[in-house]
Image 1: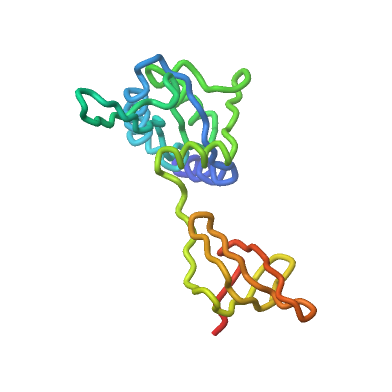
Image 2: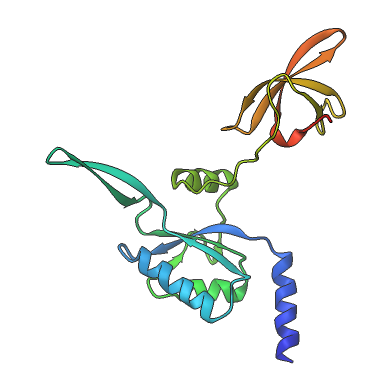
Length: 190
């Protein structure tokens, strides 16, 4: 019977989406909360509900006696980020971790961070999402795979790996027209 319930819970958690949430902690307990929560998640086999626990940190440069010293500083003192799927069980486990005073949100329902907020925080920590790579060169012919110019061929005129974008020239009505595209919107023409 326990196996059936466990598989039903697993199927239910797959339907729900994972998001990043903010939990409020006692000041100075952020790292203890992170360690305690990670231990709890592991011991209760909840890795499929609670994924990552982060204490956002950034480098702070301090100059003492003419020497540069880099220290880690908490970006949001008193807060810890948790990537999780909110179920009654996961909510209860996080909420009842020693040092946690509650989720940031209205009432008992936690409010997830927006994707742009998460990207900004991860980027500031040097943990940004992997950037797509592209294997094309300047002046190379590519085929556009999505968007308004889908299935058109174009010539690469600029590649911006930091932004994951490139500029191409599309031949429209006998004129070369520059178009900016994502790396994922083109493929090499063989």
